[in-house]
Amino acid sequence: MDYDKAAKELTDMQLFYSKPLCKIADLISSRGEDQVLLLLYSRRTPACAGDFAACLGLTSGRVANLLKQLERKEYIMRTSDPGDRRRVQISLTEKGNAYASETYEKTLRDYKWLLTRLGDKDSQEFMHVLKLGVTLLGQHEELFKE
Image 1 (tube, rainbow, N blue to C red):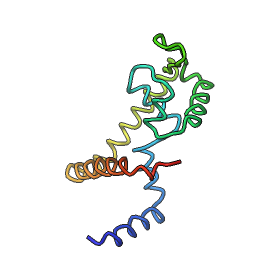
Image 2: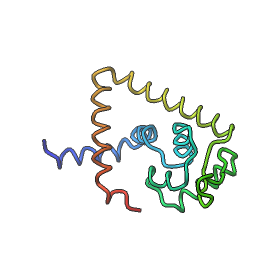
Image 3: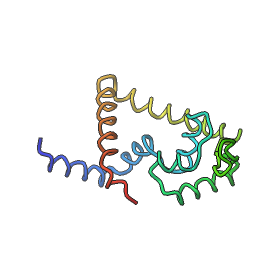
């Protein structure tokens, strides 16, 4: 394979097809309020701010801002950790749970739409390559330095 040519093709796709690529990127990754809510929703247990920073690759300041915004919207609540009063646990409110549930279901519908249009063979290849790409990028730490 000519990796220089393939890299140029990917770069050109990014430049000339940014709208559909952004839609795919939005489907597979989010690092804002919705991602925090979806992490809490899927965990079904409270988490601390450090959990979000580690999982999403965000600074503690960014996480603090996201949590303030979510608390203002009444999507989350903070409580003291019973095991360590210095730690704060974040959990979903009823309003936050309803919003996260709706967002999660929409995400599932969007993924299903894409995968059904790709078909069986291409969906399997897409998932395989996506998992491999995520694994490799996760090992390439300098890409994620802020």
